[in-house]
Length: 290
Image 1: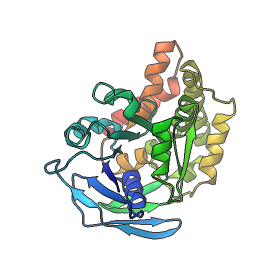
Image 2: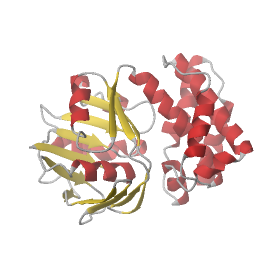
Image 3: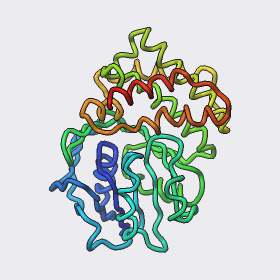
Image 4: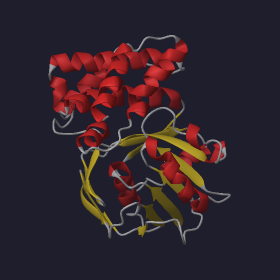
C-alpha cells in the first residue's frame, strides 16, 4: 500500500485526490480546513467519487509515503503544521502549484532530493468543499529523475497525462505564460471566452511577451510565438471556463497574483527587463482587492 496525503483539496487538489483514491493500493488522506464526507468530481470520463480519510487537524496523523501540497502559494505557512507530522525520513513531497518558485519556500525544511516540483494544467472548478468540476483531463509535468518517475507512477491508473521532463525550468515558464494572461480574466471578471475579443487578446499577448523575455533571462527556452499559442489555447477552451485568479477575485478571496504576475515583475526588475503590462495588472488587481 502507498500512503498519500493531499494538503489543500481545492479544485486541483480535490481532483487529484479523487483520482489517486481510485487505485485500491492507495490510502489517501486529505488535509482540510472545512471537513466533508466524500469527494465527488465530474470528470470528462464521467463522475468519480472517493471517501478518503478527511483530517481537519494534524493531530493523530503520522508520516506517509507521499505528501502533495496543493495549497495556494499565499497559504504556505498553513502547511507547516501538516508537514511536521506527515513527513518522515522517507517521505517525498510534491509541490503542485502555480508559478515558477515551487520548491523555494520548502527548501529549508525538506531535503532537495525529496522535493518534487510539479507544473499542473488541470482545468477544474470547486463548487463546494469536496465537489469539483474537472473540465479537461489535463496534465502534470515533473522533473526527470527517480523522484519524478515515482510520482508519475502514482497516476498510472488515471487519464491525467504525467510527463517526466528534462527541462523543467522551461515547462514551468511556459505554464506561467498561460497563467499570467489569465490576469485579464480576473481584471474584467470574464471567463475564457474574453480571449475572442481582439483588444483583450492584445493585452494578454503583452503579458505573455513580458513573461517570455523574463523567462529567457531565467534560462527557459521559450518560442517567439508563445503569446499566439496562449491566445489560441484560450480561444479553443470552453468559453465559460474560469481560472483560479478569476474565481478567487469573484469570491472575494485572496489571489495568487504574486505567483502569476508579480513574479514576472520582480524577476524582470532583477534582470533589468521592463514589464509594464504585468506591473499594471498587478497594481489594478491589488487596488480592486484593497
